[in-house]
Image (cartoon, rainbow, N blue to C red; front, side, top):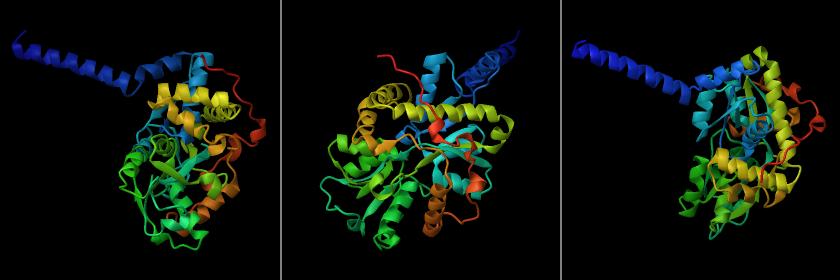
Length: 348
């Protein structure tokens, strides 16, 4: 064999090896094949961020794996909203946790998806620097506040808080910023305030430079930030699998809220295995105060979304072209009272 033939043969071998490695690491080809062989139920991918409003995603995965040795879906962690959204649009994930107004905007843009369950209730704060002269919402006039996304409910929360006090929305400057970057920005006073899902707001308290201006439960009780959205074609083709997912998410929420001990268990195994964060962050925001974020009463209900629609239209981020029945499917959980918590205790 000549030298060029040997190079060509070597290149083919390397190309095959790289393709196999890519399929294993990035496409999970072998995992999907194994899942198909084991019981005939193929798992599907669901996107999440390392925030408390997505906590039921890793909790469900951990409990299912611990109790049965298998999983009903594959959680895919993203670092920010743009990547999470694009993966969903491209079909890389079949379901995703996503900001409620952003899901509604996607439906306005023609993306066929349905909101099937909520991520949480409350679970957001607006933080200012401990040395700041901001002590009331009225003090936000002329200040700069970081929000996660144009289509975040945190942005609408500020809009509502200002409107309730007859303060023009344009008197506060809003800038978009990835939630993990917010604590550092507040610590050096690059912005006057930050607001996003936890645990990043709690981090500023733990590190000693953040002070709560408001918790969402004080401004917009039963606030919804994120929802669980599923592609319509997935619902149509495999409704049973989607029902299994929603059931697991709902049972996880009930389990988390069952006791403070369960909250602390979740903080430990989620921080270690999914979020890559120090457990103290989740332990803090899941307990200080205990109702800072809640994981029950999460069925999809029309009045909640009609309120978000009205605020979003008034704030200019939705056109009002779609409504509840266009982007929601409440049929997976008709009555929260019928949901029973997982019977599970994490290993000590």
